[in-house]
Length: 190
Image 1 (cartoon, rainbow, N blue to C red):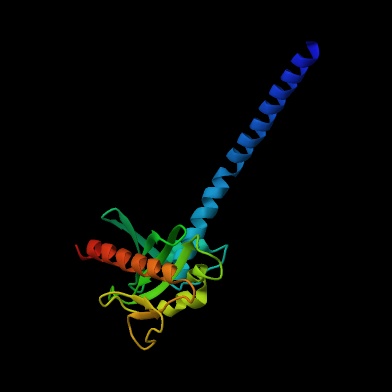
Image 2: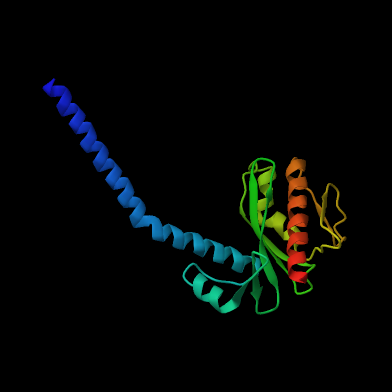
């Protein structure tokens, strides 16, 4: 009986020590995690505006180059050149896709898109996050909408070639871009 009580006390003490270490670690790293997440978002926004920065200068460059404004519950980001950006969110084939899109001052022409996160299959739908694919959207216009399709006319201002082997992701990405654009354009036009 004495041995069982010792074992139970040992497990309780061990549990308390382990929990204390975990809680202490979380409290110690929480602020750093928040700072890193904020820095990553600022870095992504700067990339979408095609503004250069380094890991050490992200916050300074962001504060100097980007102005934030909340309209209709959405935060819009403005560059000194008059470009405007906003977060884009949608459903992919396997999970949510989040990104950031910048438009030129005409509010119709895509300047750049950055994908923040996605759960698409690497090498297939995950191609939407690869820079060579995202660069295909530069200069394309929402006139009235972006069309992603197989065999797209590369000279068209509204068409982008779909991802081979990822038709459903391409369709979801098209819907995401067009829905986010229409929603944010309505807010901006008010």
